[in-house]
Image 1 (cartoon, rainbow, N blue to C red):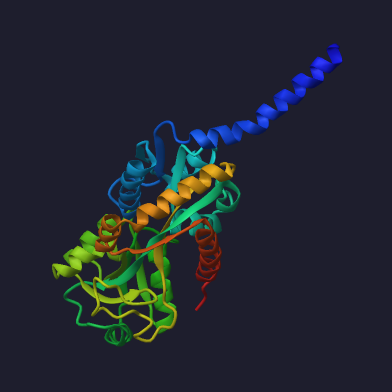
Image 2: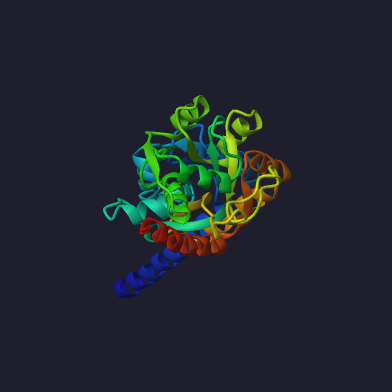
Length: 321
């Protein structure tokens, strides 16, 4: 009798354990969802996160709030999400730096994108644009390369730090054009833009979302877009590929992730909600106005994009010329 009851209790306990994830998925969400942006407020990561969080919060039935956890090139916030409970209530805004570049540059990184994060949606990307100071006597890539080769002192190009996408774009330009540049590393992008506008730098690769107001106001000159195709907001700005450097495509891209063990049903719900938010005309128009190209891809699209980006950045990080 005791044995029978024990067996029945064990079977009942096992059934409840199997039903628990389904019950959690059916009740999800029942409280606020936290979207971690692993950088300080004000950048493109932050803009993307806040637009999506606002819209998803309206449609999913619970608030989604942005939690800025900047530091260590995005590692602090990324590790926080990697170690969070896999219940759908803590998500990550991943990007070129945190997902593609950091793991390749730092073997001791405290997280691994493939091991620790479950893709939810590929949001889109912001191309880098090659800009120069207004007083530099060039207006396109050909004129810039001629000027660089004729100038005894290499032009100064600023970036937010060695190894980032802006620095690597400069290296690609240097190698592809057969010229030399002087890299000037800064602690952040804001000082780069300030010094370029003031004429203290000759050039820089900057996200279009950040550079667009400076370009429109005539405070810096755009030479070419590091993208596959022209941007609808700047139809007269040619790509660098059009101007003679094939496949010059370097973008800051963004995707949303959950901890790797998040249940299928919860991950699917979140993915559907995010993709739906990115189809909203107001969200799309605000992202596009900031220079972004909206993809709105699902989890599979983001996973495939990660593979392509890893191969591309591996090649750029090993660039020799």
